[in-house]
Image (cartoon, rainbow, N blue to C red; front, side, top):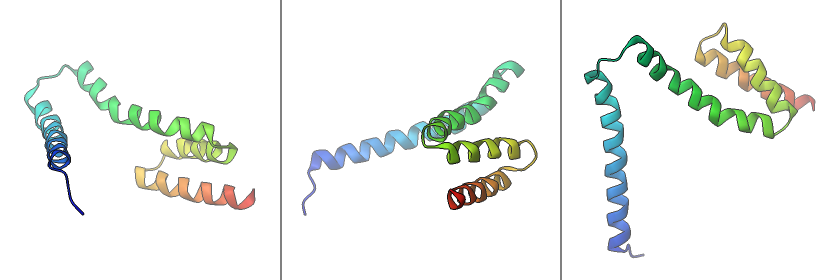
Length: 99
């Protein structure tokens, strides 16, 4: 098996760029003085991205997945993240077992 030099270079450059964006994203916010409103907006990004990734799958795959997602939303009001994940796993396994 041979590796083309162009492909290897592309892989190395893509890895470096990926690493660079992560490092900059980690270091840059500590140097910025954000207003409380801007800080609240930045804090809302992770849950918004999570919902944008999960919602289409939960709503397009079937009633069991949609119901399990709603159960997780209800559990999220009371439980920490690990508890919500556990509730979600149990809910989907139970719903798939009964139907």
